[in-house]
Image (cartoon, rainbow, N blue to C red; front, top):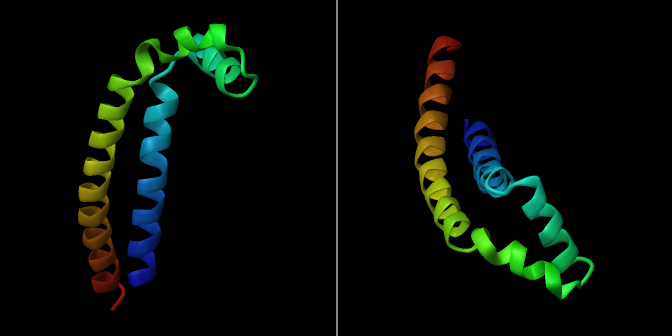
Length: 87
């Protein structure tokens, strides 16, 4: 039971911020951020930083909060249901 809860929480906490970060940027923004951070072309940094700072950080904050709450709730709920059914 502890293993299922741990895996559920770990996957939820890992995937939520990743999906928010990925889905919050357009392909153009990802290109500009890649050219800015990976290739060191500073003229692209203006386009990268235009929208990603405040919106993305707030979205990641809320995604982490809700992922924590719901992963705890549903991992407990479904593991209890599973073990009650199979006992």
